[in-house]
Length: 327
Image 1: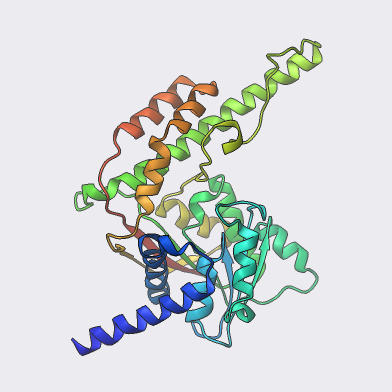
Image 2: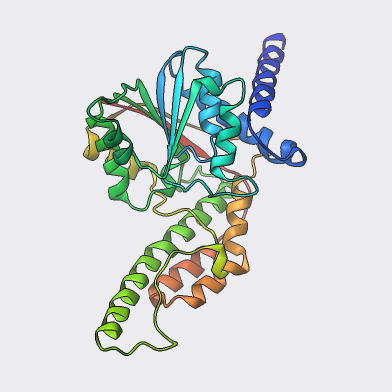
């Protein structure tokens, strides 16, 4: 009991340290941020990255995973977070504002951030001298990659840069007899979003072809087709999940893209207070997504599969699969 109490006290101290460094709304601290950072620390304890490591954190977003890494790996470490999002992405505090606050915090000297870059762009900007990273991490970020090929390309870039260890934490989508039904909602919501964007890309391509044909015939009018990204500005949902690759796809991409093999892997279930599935489900069930579906001429098979996924939503539990890939 004493050991368990000491562990709990240590975790609380770490979470409090992170909260002092991470900008957030105080009113949401207990509901959102404490469970989020407890989950991040649980992942890092399973990864067991060596203290003092130089780490590239892929898909760092507002910086919460990078911040947790900086705390756990100690004063000799350095964490570089990269993300494809523009600096003004996010609310109520955008990516740039959040990262700037982190850099001004007591852990800021262990961190660096670059936005609007993917791994290829990042490493290209470092040539002819490329910083040597001991490891790369992807903490719940591969779901947001646009395609399987982009995930494989990531591992290829990491291998080319001499990164030998890649630590991944992503959602387990495998439905087995032992898979609790209560864990289904988040996975179904993510798959629904992935379906939406897969068929949206097809519809956008068709729309682009039609727009080009109209242009060539000089038949533009008020009904001219416009092709663009979904955003909250035009009343469509600000969803960000794209490919949502499953664990098997990620493993295959790691091998095919960069020659990585799985060294360790396992599963864990975060606490019941972690709300990620509730938020993702809410995005799928909101009116904005339905409006977006009506406004876009998605193929009928896409609409049927999408609505089928939404109808199956239910439950609350989450499960993640984590793993380390090594060359």
